[in-house]
Image (cartoon, rainbow, N blue to C red; front, side, top):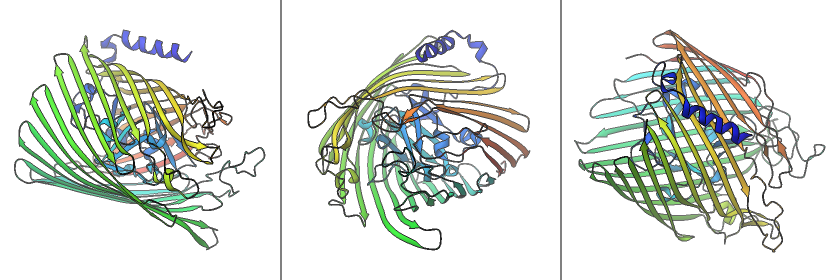
Length: 631
């Protein structure tokens, strides 16, 4: 039934008269570029690997108050959250594991070295200018982790006359937030600074424990603590650039976010976290055909954990300080107007410091890559190969190749194949009593076939893919340790559609994924009981529909986001029901410089879970005032 509905939707798009979709302002910016898919600037419509851009106007219009809310339901993306704002949030891309998604901030690789996850919940949405999402393996350009895809977050970059900005808001569950900044620049350079603060009393994050009737051992948070679990986040973002002559430009950026997160737990229930990203980039263009870029970066992921009895007593339960230092050099050579050759090298140093004893606390990785991009009339070609030399795992080579054909009325056909890998984390390898030092990297290979149409006032894309992952690291009950025992086969289809109809901007994104455990045998030779089961915590169907319209000084919008059922465990015995939430938003431009914003999230007060035993917020209201002087 699902495939029949999808086929009818695609047929409707293909057969729709172009004039019927061409009312109002342009819905598709054909000049929009993406850099993450190739490490060079490429028009979004010409990308041979499925990509999406969430620009600043869309971020502001959505009124999203967290990065996970902004990403929820987008093509290929599913979210698992443990209890509302600020709580642990896993982002799954194309059915891959949450730690198989590479995240970059302004070109700097981020994520916890020990856990292997990126703290999406602690990255403030008010500091983000745009987001690029590339779906599918990209290890041939970035190395480890890029199996499910790559998400790159760009903080603000200011141009033009210096101007200030401010936003203040309140909302349900004691939400208080404020942000302010200034930025601008001219021919010789630019500078910007922003600060942001968000605080909420939160909701009761966990509703059940192992002591609840019918709960299996290990369910929930091991304690009955029916209180509100608050969250607060303070952040600062500084960036700037200067042009050193006609061919040289130097840029720098710094982002720091400090958070305090309350949750439910018997061993610890309070965490104070820091996410810090520092970066510097030097770009040199000696000739019209040569671009050389050198970049340095550092990401610090720090967590201090406590057990708080809410009566003034707080016990320190441990800390994890992880750092990731990176350096890269890339040269792009335009052979002619149709052929581009890129070569580069990346160096990475990971380190962890904790009161938990790790046998090994640091490691290096050096990667070199080569990429070719060519255009021959209506044909496009992209090929890349990379070798990573890891201090612990030796040499690992990945590759990717993509082909594109433009035809007819702005149609584009694409096909690609790529391999990927992910190195085990320090927790996988060395966590006391739970680590296994001889684990091997996880490996993948993926195929994608797509067709799209990028017309002046509408666009749509349809992609079908398959990813096979070997040596997945999972808990092995025969040795009571993690082991390379699992295999997965993931198949899926993604449909996106954007247009403007009768003055309404319409965006639709639908995803169907089938992430299956394909492990045949356990290490002891017995049949694997979970073979054929769905991978845990991933819905097979996700999607969102966004509609917006401006009428004079007023703007209105709505978002419908949903997901089908999922299973919370590998045995597929704990089923979480599907859900759909409906969000409303409105804004009123009181004065060219002042805008009043209002929103209602989950308007129908839908009760649902994305992780078993962990609550999600019900209906929420928000009101904010935004000031941005028009220059």
